[in-house]
Length: 358
Image (tube, rainbow, N blue to C red; front, side, top):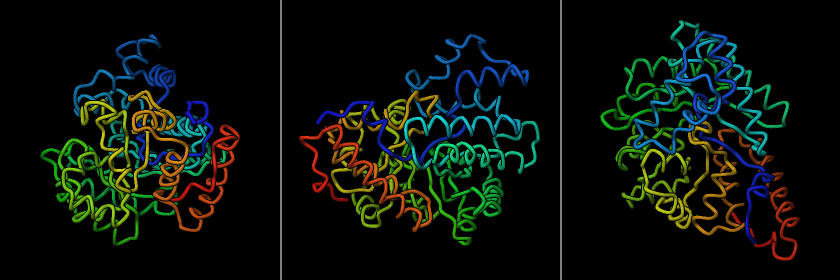
């Protein structure tokens, strides 16, 4: 039973680690730059697209993150934020994503001193409108930045609290791990936990498992962004597994930031074999030039996964979503049946839905 990209695109799926400022359409970026008078390195769409699909040429996480300076230059106006959020929802729905969680840091969109509400509300509205049109649930995750003053993270956490239940699903901490420990931002996460809000932390991407430990034990993270180096601490890995703490894995991004040498060298296959709750995500659709469908197919080919294993991974994505339990349970029932139906259509002689367990 060989999986192909058209088959994978048909499957319902999630994207729960997706950065707004890494997911623009190149044409949209060109149009926004023209409208706003922003200078770009080139006005030719093919050249701009190649420049923005920079992941394949980066040599480190720092190189990868620097591309965001370019995309952020056109995301300083309310209308632009709405448009990019709406188009991202459209693009995700185009590959049958059913639940989309988009993260970004509002502080990075204040170069023109936009009021906070003019940064947060258009993103929520753009995702909601796009999702509603295509039958997809959406929500945002507000990010603190490791390299910024922890007081800034605390203020961003206050914004997450203010918009709890109004489109904001969770709080995150992103940015360079080295020299910027998560525990410095403890106050922000204490506020988040006190207000019963979900949290995730980028950890174990470009730094060792100690970073994951801080995310869990100082910040109370409910999920871990990347977690690539978790395998270096077997005791911590057992804890993550026993507590069913999901890992938001982004295969292409991890290769492009040189966190791992190649897809086959990625610990995803090991984690999956050990029973960890692993999910597959895009990270940055534009910069990594990828989709969730591409990430699933990469995993299937690199780690020899068939339809049964792919179904388990997709189901883990839905289980890991920051959604109310009742909504998640209802979604899971429908998704499981839909995946079985698709695989029975594609592999009528071989697929047995009774084999699947999760």
